[in-house]
Image (cartoon, rainbow, N blue to C red; front, side, top):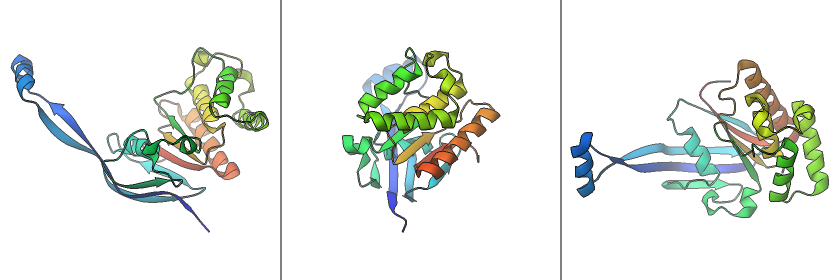
Length: 220
């Protein structure tokens, strides 16, 4: 029987942003009276995701995809609505919750550029308190899956964009998270590298049962 591990009901995120008229007069006037406008980034979203699903959130820039991912991972709090991820309210930021998911942002890196890939993985092993046996098994599995044995002892800063994304995924999956959140993971990659990443994700979803939530500009 399928289990809903993400439950979202009428979720909304609104921002209040400062506005001013152009020029010096506008700047001076804003010192005495500020004007604001309200921007709705996410408006009334409802969805549920079952364990083991691979879900794509597709839409143009500004559609609120990244904001939704940030609310599901607790990076930002919603303005209204209900959200439950793995039985937690994400923005409580409980350590037990943070160990159950991983997030990879295509335009941001969690890697340490001056370290080698192996040293980066060892650092994340300590952060997530992964037992040695589990660490080695996960590492060996993903190194083989990604065909990355030849880049494990080189500095992260020397990797190509495609190689770096593979290592972003390896690092994120090292602690065997129940959910993997991906925000534009193939952005900037060429067609071949992007296809490889999609193949890897399907394999991870199928073989390890990892629930995957992926955002994209386009249908992949």
